[in-house]
Image 1 (spheres, rainbow over the protein chains, first blue to last red):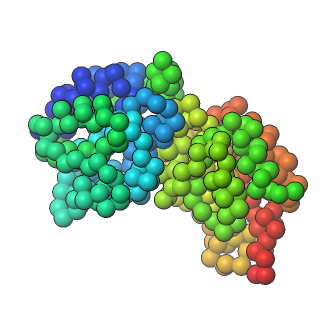
Image 2: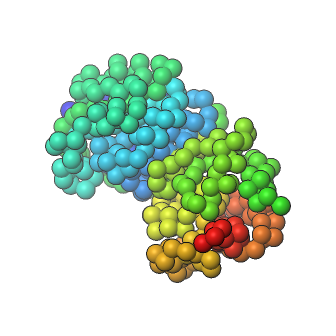
Image 3: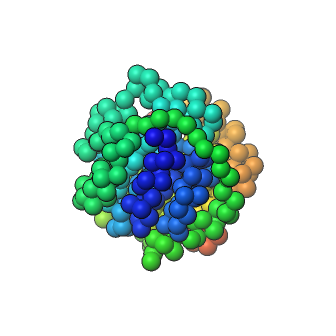
Length: 184
Length: 168
């Protein structure tokens, strides 16, 4: 499966929850598949999906899912020790690991070669790290959201992109809509 | 006057309850003070752009955030300031140790000091420079201003403000 197929499959699971979605194609795909006020789309700032989602999870009680990518986590590896050492049960980090920088043309990442983000997350002190194959993600993600313990999911999948439009919604509108959903 | 307690007190009085820090020798006292306050959640960051991501999330979650860092971080965070904090119009008080100014013992710090105000000006970031202890009196007003206008605001605090480096 490629990332857009995964997002299509998990859309019903994440629909009612706060989601912070990674820059570029992941946000564009989620926006096209199932736009929700509970989705915060990143239009820039590669690497910070996990940090934004984690700050949100620490600040309030609702479940938060950060959708991140292997390339973006590699950009902000310092996020994993911070998350591990301040764990909060309402947070789930979903790393869609296709071993490539999808939004820039599928150049290979080191996660697709020798580096295991699952091992890195564990070494950083994250207690619940689950590596899962794309087709098995749904139930794993559902139980991570339902659980009182923070979970890091590394979902291995194929690289590949679909053609789709950019998000033209104004960033302040995205943010304002999202904040109202947080408070609702 | 104890500057560290005054700054922490102003932060609490302005309902700032989520603070991330990247350490600096000059900021050690205020970071320690913040860490001890029950009404502030202190989360150290490994890098300042990561910290700004945490602050952005915390603010959307209903908490008023702040970041405490060195001026070298301006070099690290230009993209995050432009594409996250400013683009989505979020408030972020940035208490910054202004290394490389008068009474600085480390020559390399001057290399970023000479760019600091120019970079902040280029980014249209409101910038205040605390040089004397009494300048801290404005801190409360600066916090109110920051959360009024939903912008990142820089408070540069130099070695003279903090009382120098002891024997150095």
